[in-house]
Structures are given as C-alpha cells and as structure tokens.
Amino acid sequence: MTALLDRPATTARRPLLSRGVGFAGISAAMVAILVAAGAPTPLLPVYQHEWGFAPWVLTLAFGIYAFSLLVSILVIGSLSDHVGRRPLMIAALGIDLVAMLMFLFAPSIGWVIAARIVQGVATGAASSALSAAVVELAPERFKKLGAQMTSMAPLGGLAIGALFSGVLAEFSSNAAFDVWLVLAVVMAAGTLFATFTPETATRKPGAIASLNPRLKLPVQVRRLYWTTVPSIVGGFMTMTAFMGLVPALLVAVFAVKSPIVGSLLAFVALGASTVASAFTSRYRPPTLRTAGTGAMVVGAVLFIGSIGATSLPLLWAAAIVGGAGIGASFAGTTRGLVPEVAPHERAGLFTAIFFVGYLAMGSAAIVAGLFVGVVGAASMAIGYGVVLAVITLAGLAATRFSRA
Image 1 (cartoon, rainbow, N blue to C red):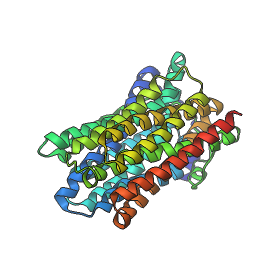
Image 2 (cartoon, rainbow, N blue to C red):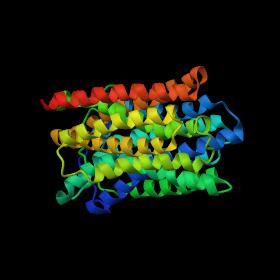
Image 3 (cartoon, rainbow, N blue to C red):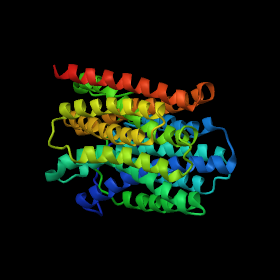
C-alpha cells in the first residue's frame, strides 16, 4: 500500500473529457458538496419537532460536522498533491454519497449526527482537492475565473442547499426523505463524472508522510496568511450565526416557527457572499479584504441590535451586510494567496485556510449551544455577536497593518 501511494506516475492516462468540460463539471461538483452541507440547516428544527431532543443538540449536530471536516482536511488535505486530484475527488464524492444514504434512512438524531460526521469527512477530503483542481482545470484565458470559483462555489452551494432544503421543509409532507434522495442522486452522478475528469497534478513521493496531521503552509505566503486569519475566523463565525444559531433563535427569541424563514436568512447571507465574490474581481485583494472585514464588523453590530431589539428587519440587514462581507473578505484572501504559490502547493494552502475557518465554525457552534442552557438564547446571541465584532475588528486592523 505504501509503495503504491508513494510511487510516481510513469504514464499519463488519456482523459475522456476535455479540460473545459472537466472545469465545468468539477465546479458543479464542488457546489453540490456544499449544497449537501447546507441542506441540514432547515431540517434540524424539523428533526427536533419529530424526535423531541434538547436545543443544544441542534448546535452539536451543526458543530460536529465542522470538527470532522477539520480532522479530515488536517489529515488528508495535502494528499492530492501526492496522489493526484482525481483519486481524492472520486473518494470524497463517494463518501458523501454514503452520508446522503445515512441521512435518507436515519431513524434518530444519533444517525443524523453520525451522517454529519461522515459528511464532514467527505467535505474535508473534497475541499482542497476540488479547489485545486478547479484552478488547474480552468482554461488559460479563464484562470481568474478558476480562482474566483474557489471562493464563490462554497458560499453559493451552502446558500442553495439551505434554500432548497427550507422550501421542501415548508411545503413537502416528507421533506427530509425528498431532500436526501435528490442529493444522493446528485452525489452518485458527481462520483461518476469525476472518474472521467482529466488529472491535473503530477504524482510525487511522500503520500504516506503527508497523512501526518500537520499544516503545510508555503513559506512565501506565511506572513500574508497570518494577517488574514482573524478575517477568515470572522467569516466562518458569521456563517455559523446564520446557519447554526439563527434557526434556534427564530423560535426562542422571535417566536417564528416556519422553517423557510431560517433558510431564507441563510440563503440571503450566503447569497450576498456569493454576489460580493462574483462582482468584485476588478478590485485588488487588499482592498477586498479591508472592505469585506469592515462589512462583517457592521454585520455583527446589526446582529447584536436585532437580538436586543427583537427586530427581524435588523436581522435581515445583518444577513445582507455580514454576508457580503464574508464574500468580499474570502475572495480577497484567496485571490491574494493563490497566485503566490506553486501548483503543487495549492492543496496545502487551501488546507491551511479551511483549517482555521472550520475550527472556528465548530468551536463557535458547540460553545454557543452550551451557553444557551446557562444564560438563555438571547443573552447567548448577544455575547456571540460581541465576540464576532471583536474578532472582525482585529481582522480589519491586521489587514490595514499588512498594507502599511
């Protein structure tokens, strides 16, 4: 097994798909993985109503996904730099198909949490490999689009997943079954497509060694990377607020029980992120990071105000402003870092980016869930907003310092 993983490829297989078709298909697969990741958000309150578990279990089910994803990218995030992108993409999509089937036939919240763990492993395995493959498969005249897709696809996928699942939760008599059946078919199709996608990375020795849990951040971008960390953390915490906390807050603070409201708020936040990422390509990365992090600060203040005043309009405003901040900041981060590293270093770079983001996401969700039982939902949310505002302010200061 060791010899197989560490053996360099001696011949190149003739691809059955062109690089352009591969770029389109793998971009779609990256979106699909994140659609599936966003789908549980509106369904968790439905499961709670059906199975009657405690509110903190909602945040556990959300946070455990982030931690399993974190372990996955930490262990195998750089593996595709050694064995190639295609094998890891096929494996990741296949594992996500298993997770969809577990969701489909889940008889209890324990099975849902187990499925979230498997889904986290799959998404972690896919994150760096698919991101790197999209950049490398992009036609020469569309290289900027390839880098742009790495910031747009995750955000857009989560937004679509939340909306798709929320609409079915509102109008379908068996929403959970319908959601997971559709996504199982999509994952099966994505797995099949990946097997015919051209390889973009040359195999090299060291695959087994790359499985040791460590970050491999290229030396030339370390200073820039560390100045972006507070903004990355703030962006993922903002996502956690609207995907992990808002569904419970709508019930406990705003007395809104319709699942589609929570899914629409998540869709608006992540949709604004996608739009901000898509339509800011003409701006320099430092400008994007400054504007995006500043918007997240404002979004955190609006979030605090919405809870304090029990104001849904302020919560919608927080979703729009904070969401746009996520997209602009993350786009500035990836567009600033990716061009500075060699192709064989890209998976390691994306691993480092996603590592701090998902660590923040999982920790924030679980800690917030624990505090709900101690101080109540409203006080927890206000405290969460204050911490988010402080972190994003630190990110804004770090970004400004890096430009000095």
